[in-house]
Amino acid sequence: MTRVYNFSAGPSMLPEAVLKQAQSELLDFQGSGMSLMEMSHRGKHFSTIAAALEQDLRDLMRIPENYRVLFLQGGASAQFSFIPQNILGDKHKACYIKTGAWSQKAIQDAQSYCETVITASSEDTNFTDIPDASTWQNDENAAYLHYTSNETIHGVEFNYVPDAKGLPLVCDMSSNILSRHIDVNDFGLIYAGSQKNMGPAGVTLVIVRDDLLGKCAKTVPSVFNYSEQVKNQSMLNTPNTYSWYLMGLVLQWVQAQGGVEAIEQHNIAKAAKLYAAIDASSLFRNPVEKSCRSRMNVPFILADETLDSAFLSAAQSSGLNELKGHRSVGGMRASIYNAMPDSGIEALIRFMQEFERTH
Image 1 (cartoon, rainbow, N blue to C red):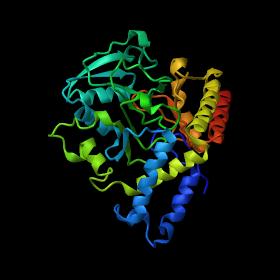
Image 2: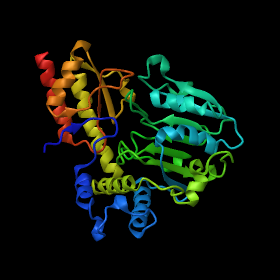
Image 3: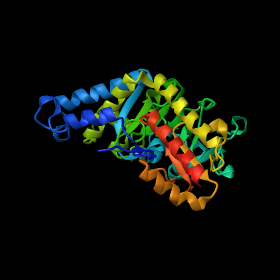
Image 4: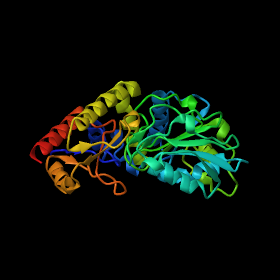
């Protein structure tokens, strides 16, 4: 069997070493005679996995003791609603930075629970940049400031942590978590879906500072209440056990690569190589302002869009899959998360250069 290079925005490719270990343990997990998928989430095997999962994440991200770590369900999209319900408290406003489709969706959902103040927006530039921080307007009476650190669809990424002007900072890190070093102390709450850099779909990570807990309205169901999930170690209901296991294997793989700092340097090099090839081309173009180009999701446009179908077909025949851009923006997109090897970037560049030569 020949594996292809999977440039999907998510679920994304997983490290081959992780897949092989999961394969070897699928039928008989550590001599138990059972698959982990068949085991109780209260049993000793899974309890060990759960404890290691949290500790490994704390070690990789250097999560301070005054933060709780939750592994939930519903995807990051569910958190668009759960966050205001959990941390608004007695406030009625929340600030949002709008830099693409996902921050826009977070705003839309939050509007059901509070007044949303748009601190900054790049909608007028079709989400191809990040507004200059000097133009931002926070509301000091808001409960928090929310932003999306990497916009998967538009390929825009913050290369710095915004100044929240005293508000708790809330961040959707779904598509760039574990890809670059951050200081968790800068944030009140971090959340992310697992299906980009942490494992398969099915787990939603929430890292929340202690002082933001205990503000949930009584009308909110217990499974959506962070405080209740903290009390129950994220197992108020049965978790997605197999995805927890696979996420744990991915964290071990990140550690084996040298940790987040080493992964970041690798990501910088991969992205720079691909952007350099695009910028040197007369057929391909990246529409994003250079200062905020994403290291994870690289959109590009062909000068002649009638060639799009031919490009995608030929790419797939060459083992380069899932390069079609999101339906809302068109064009192409190469998602090059942590698990994408150098050889995948090099194969894509060679293909693009040959396609340009023949077209």
